[in-house]
Length: 216
Image (tube, rainbow, N blue to C red; front, side, top):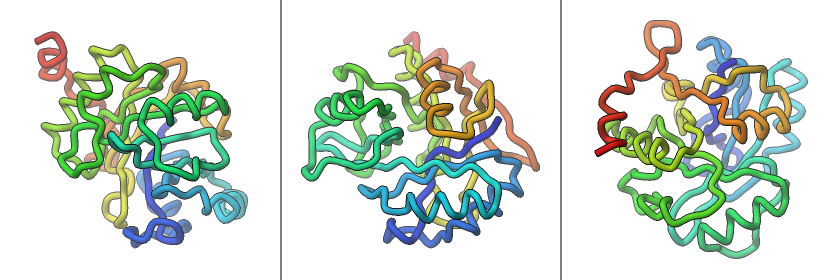
């Protein structure tokens, strides 16, 4: 099944222009079977997402994008976030203690919010966003190569703030992801394949160049 794991909705992300019901319709049009909402430092959309998920019969899982001192982490499986800004390792530990997972978001984007090579010093990171829809492809390839070197699951997601970006990248899972427990289990097991949308369907990315980067 296919899921876009990193989308921002306008209610809790002030830089987004996307309404949740519109996101679902766009996702359905592209053939996605679930979406993840990861607003900036907020899980406030959760009750609305539950209601819309039932109303539209479409899985909507709510995570959060949290800015640490070193860069952004996507968290899933937590019901709140810390009151104070943390270092990345502290937040990874905090998330694990609560049964959640931590994913490095757009780790090589040049926006001051990327973990970069700090990832190689972290313990307990659960995955890396190898394809991010708001990141140049050359920097996504760096993230992919880092994930291969670290042996971590690779995720694909749009990081959408606008309608035309929803679903440009997604993650293919080996089984259905309906509930949060499904998502956590699949990522922990490494059952993830980053994919991109083109000509009405999703495709695997050509990894030949990326493998060369990983072993260089």
